[in-house]
Length: 193
Image (cartoon, helix red, strand yellow):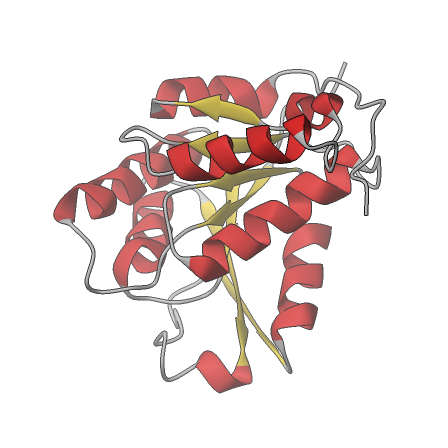
């Protein structure tokens, strides 16, 4: 059985145009991670969901690792209060470090950057390149169209049905924490090109 994660990579938005409920969600996730003494690995920004997540994690007793590309330090306003702030040369290096430093992955609602990061770790899990839990926290149905598109890819033969076992879709923070600690189901299919 997989050990309880100590370090969770959270993908989420840095947009300041989002509804307040998303900021509250980030607060709740950070509090849940921090209260368990877990480390939150994030994109290293101090604004919007990213910043709220990190601050809530620290306030609840957790540790934060922010990983931010040099080019985004000003745009996403680097989290200088992070317990550890890693500045990378580019996005690929950022994602590699976030992956290396994490025992599990949690995607919150976000934009194209969040989606890209989430899809990469989901794909890597489906291809058996890692055995870390991948969880999508979706309390308001923000991922519904993505899920419908994945179903269409499965129906078209582009994606193996077993790839669905590599991500857990949940609607509450409590279920997300439970899913992050649950055993990972192996995928016998692969993503087809």
